[in-house]
Length: 303
Image (cartoon, rainbow, N blue to C red; front, side, top):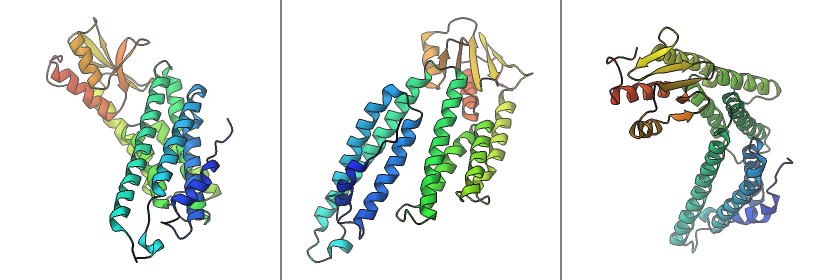
């Protein structure tokens, strides 16, 4: 799919920053470019049947935010004489609300599409798509950081984009996903060979160690003779190949138990005949809590 542009909003972006920036044309251009990168990163791993609707809705929320921003004004630009503070504050509140709606819609839409994609996919495909989304997000942020380094983009905050990369990868490190963290670090080192994105002194490059430590916590918590934990009416298995903690019952559990499993974020897998979650520290604690809370343990210890 060809890159989707937002150039149709150039005039609207110019008007949006006319009363808040000394260079509304350049500010508007930077905003257009930044959101183009974001939109295309979102579309990169999205099924074709979802893209048209997503593009339409993205543009609708984007334009609504720009329109709201066009009513905002700064006394530094307009001059202090006769500046209506009350009107400016109301306009700012409307602009913040419009931008908040934009962000919330995007998060909900991406989660809904991701959830729909994962329902029928085999585990290896889920893992592949998960990595591709992370990779595209890193590449998008890296592109903006390079524009900032080269002086092309003078309006964006470099530290925010560096933090964005770090925070996304750190989530995988907390979950003990050594493989994904390793690929992310390798990608950044390749990007740094062309143009510096994140220096080697940054804590980002310590994340593989964090991932390994958290993987050990998961293993220590649930590994028992390489199989898992037996409980009344079933067992917990550490499926390292599929990167899942799986709860398997000898017989179909009651509706109440199923409801509690769902509340603990475990999902039914027909393929494995198990209730499962990705193998993370949080998943290990959730499984332990579920067993204890439902009096399913043979004793008071899962180790």
